[in-house]
Image (cartoon, rainbow, N blue to C red):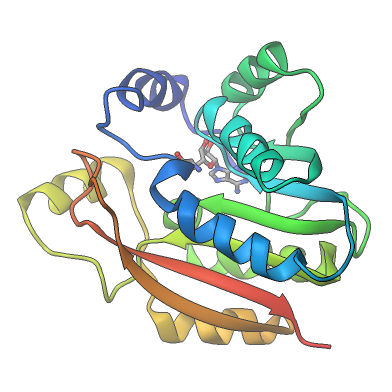
Length: 219
Ligand SMILES: C[S@@+](CC[C@H](N)C(=O)[O-])C[C@H]1O[C@@H](n2cnc3c(N)ncnc32)[C@H](O)[C@@H]1O
């Protein structure tokens, strides 16, 4: 799969601090709540975390901080097709493993991550690619692990001039909730879908309604 151009990541770095595009912070509360609930009673102190598709160095570091605020040490691995955010990430925090990879096929062992997270990666991938990524998530998650991610679905996609422009410029994909249920089911996971309203919508997003996908392996 081809790497997305440098211009995309450069723009993201500039636009994110200005609030024009989003970050993990949009769904931080939701993700943190899921992680807290999942691990509160199982005596784990270290969480092994896989972050898929980061447009900037900031997102995985925010994840690391949030997990540390919950009282866990974390071992974070970040995967992206693009070198730029990974290079920046490694410069900022060399303890985070930053690896250039296609998330459709990852070289990690089965059951090796407690948490797999990402935001809006799926809107950059076709449903066929998403099926592969979700298959990999189901394989690398520990039996008691959890994946929590945000995505725009067909249901919360709004057709307006802004979405027309953005979706065509950045070739976005929108699957339906039923597609997600089918894709996660095929990967052996139970899926919980929650729609939430962001307190502050990033300027370039066409809606303030986001969908959170939370899934666990079916045992
Ligand atoms: C929409 S951006 C992620 C935004 C970021 N998670 C956030 O919340 O701000 C998607 C990222 O996924 C990466 N990406 C796209 N397809 C990928 C794939 N198949 N494997 C790994 N990374 C991918 C892109 O290079 C980009 O950095």
